[in-house]
Length: 68
Image 1 (cartoon, rainbow, N blue to C red):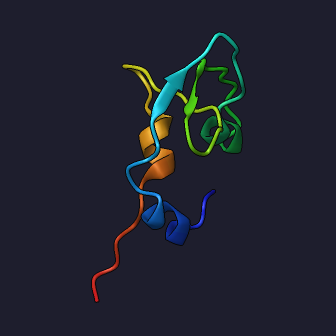
Image 2 (image 1 turned 45 degrees about the horizontal axis):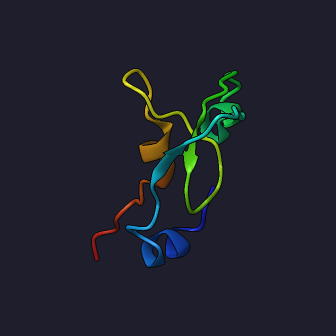
């Protein structure tokens, strides 16, 4: 996973892009799920599911907020 400080600094430059090639979903692979989407993050350059059934892209980029 990506460090939350990096995610906060680069917030807004992560976009889903679709290509011709498939790759293993970074988030699904950590859960033992076989998934090979064509979608990946334009900034992180990792493959992530992004469709009507599953949105690993959003989950991968979520940042936990801490109330101080």
